[in-house]
Length: 511
Image 1: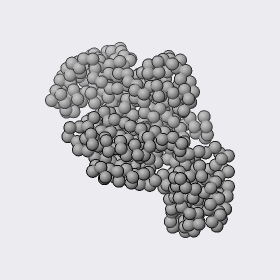
Image 2 (image 1 turned 90 degrees about the vertical axis):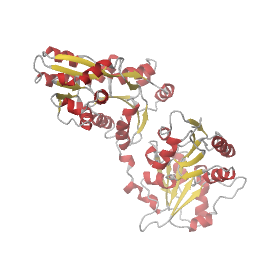
Image 3 (image 1 turned 120 degrees about the vertical axis):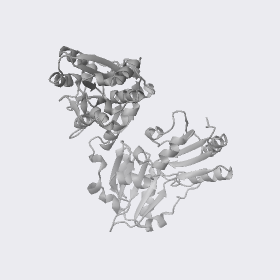
Image 4 (image 1 turned 135 degrees about the vertical axis):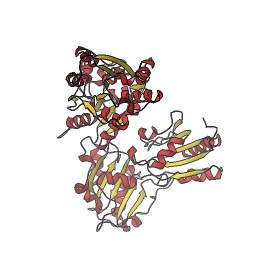
């Protein structure tokens, strides 16, 4: 497992409260270089995506009534993994030193002579209230905040902090791991003299899409939480700042807040769509169903790159085609100057942007971002007898070459790449769909439709309760051919258009 060149080291990494975007850059880098990742219950799966594919992942999460591994065994595991020569990322929710028992792990590592580094994380004590619209400090309202464990001391009846002290602290009180003792917390504070009318709030799964907030006052918050059915994990906030939530709350206003969306693009292409959806409040599960691979034979593309000056037109149908062509051009010892005398055309702004990255900025595009739209535009400009190179996916529809040939062009239809089916984790996705825990599934091409169905064993019934979101008419046709009706199709056949269409599903309330 360990790399021969690596030296044993343990990173005690705070992963933040749940939102994968709150992981620090240093935390990301620690996870990315680790041979083994030892992680807790409230660490987002997206955070673990930063780990190397060959890294060993070991779950040691703890719930209120169940522990995958006792703390003493976790300590021993970290020591053993490091002594085997591994770089270890011990990934904990929140901050490792805020009720995360990171100090105990550090002591154990020091005693064993194992080098370690602490990577602080964003604690839920601050982040969960912030995502609920509750600042833990506020000018004129609270000049301090105190973080208190809600757990009692092991084997003792008295609370971890005497209530008379807590009631006199002033400012904001934040209780972590206090849901099971919420009635005792409220009674203890009021019994020590705190006004029962003091504003209070409970934030469940703060920063996660399932985040839910219950507001009230100290004397009624326990009943309000019970009536709302809110359970662990949650943060309890007591203080005047809790009354600011109606004015400051923000994340609930995002159009996709609380929605779970599955992105089915190739892994290296998914990040742009994922970021756009997450920016609008969605929880995204990336489920790559295709992988971009070289074509079955690379010689036709290489030959076209060597003789590109022979073409009056060079046409690209996707950013993948652009990248594959320029790799072939580089392999031939050429660059973008080889296209100086050719007219270049592309389907869609993403393809045009890929060309711009290679210095090709004068690009023709169809009004509609599909093969038919581009072919209709080109038919007005391509003269009979001109040579046209079309670089596209091996399995693409042949509508564009056929329409150009019908216009009198001599077309070389060259496979620049091919898509192959993948689908690691298909049983997990099927279980989520079956349980109704997926709100929407995105499809950015026909291949994402066919390959997702292949991953699901052809069981279209699994997709009946999710909103199927199509990037354009070709993808929509593939869905319908499979007996599936999309809930929405993008007006503009781009990633931005698809995101706008998904947001429209829940505009003005629940779908």
